[in-house]
Length: 91
Image 1 (cartoon, rainbow, N blue to C red):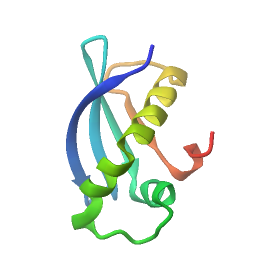
Image 2 (cartoon, rainbow, N blue to C red; image 1 turned 180 degrees about the vertical axis):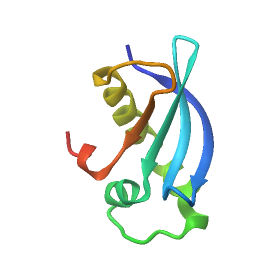
Image 3 (cartoon, rainbow, N blue to C red; image 1 turned 60 degrees about the horizontal axis):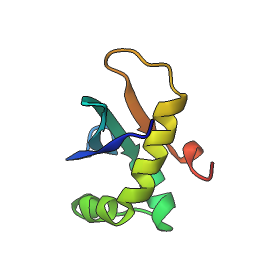
């Protein structure tokens, strides 16, 4: 069952990732995509931190589809976080 759109949390400078949530039948699923993966999807490198939200919004549908696919393949346990890295792209 595909995840559905939820909230944008924002850029995590410590983890160099953009955080967001999705829903699975009313349950909140924590998700994040690495800066490198977002840049790869956008076909660029070194996006400024201040531009990460705009970048996420422009790629949101693709990112959410990847997150949903990874969630469907993952073992499910409380606190599981869907993490998207460059290796997950082009699947």
